[in-house]
Amino acid sequence: MLKPHLVADSAGEFAHAVLTGLAQPQKTIPARFFYDHAGSELFEAITTLPEYYPTRTEVGLLTAHAAALGTAIGPGRAVIEFGSGSSAKTPLLLRAIAPAAYVPVDISAAFLQQSAAALAAGFPGLPVLPVAADFTRPFRLPAGIAGLPRLGFFPGSTLGNLAPMAAVDLLRSFAATLGAGSWLVIGLDLAPGPGKPPAMLEAAYDDAQGITAAFNLNLLARINRELGGTIPLAHFAHRARWNASLSRIEMHLEALQDTAFSAAGQPFTMARGETIHTENSYKWSLAEARLLARASGWAPMAEWSDADAKFSLHLWQHAPATLQP
Ligand SMILES: C[S@@+](CC[C@H](N)C(=O)[O-])C[C@H]1O[C@@H](n2cnc3c(N)ncnc32)[C@H](O)[C@@H]1O
Image (cartoon, rainbow, N blue to C red):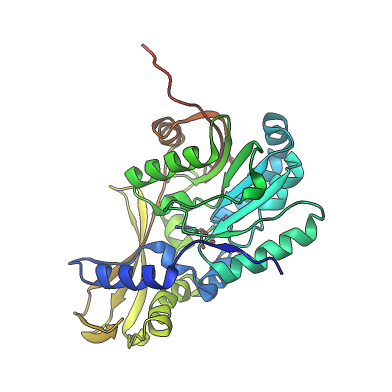
């Protein structure tokens, strides 16, 4: 089995994030902590739900535009995928561009190890070099790709978990990590429009089978498992709502009754109706996506979306800043 190079100290980071986040007036825990092994498996189950349009729409775009991506990008690059998860979409890109190496980067170390091994089995001869890291913090790329030109791959609209300023910072850091002349293929979920009512968005984050609810509640179960928490899961319910003024879906865990628990050795209380804010998922227009690129050192080279303008796929190139009038 491929062993990922481990960069993150996730146990200490998780305890710190939980203690800090639960002490805020609006309790909050960053979305990256959803992804322990159980969380990664639940996310995979979400991607197959009838309500969850992003995965099948992005797969459709990657399939339809693979040839154009191959022509623009060309062969021989190291592909660095940020938040690679199951790497299920990756073969569509790899077959189109004939890369020299593949580096999946994910915070969910054990799941990454499984996914990297499965992908490597399908691409004999391709060096697959997994890195278990939090990509919002500095991390090193494997020495095995030194000297290779690079392509970043950031599908799934994972960027949407970050507020706009943090998203720009992350895209800037990707530009610095990948280097001048690199490319980025990025999938971004689009804001509501005529073919995409807000109700479609809310259903995608609150499915009828309750898989997204289980994904959200797994964060509390993870606190109980890893940080000796005593959170009564039955006292909480999953909530997903469209915040139109901030153009984002918000996920919360709402206390159904007054409740008290401990986590990482600290006591906490919550009143009925109080929530823990667990995820934002920002949605953009195509024009905003271009602005995000330009604000972070990337030049938008091509963009595609589906007929209903539900989801978008972008090809950007790292353009070092030049002085312009
Ligand atoms: C929304 S899922 C997308 C998965 C996959 N890329 C897709 O398109 O279906 C987000 C993925 O990014 C990973 N992830 C989230 N935040 C991360 C972070 N800060 N650093 C590294 N990986 C992260 C998660 O473990 C998960 O695999």
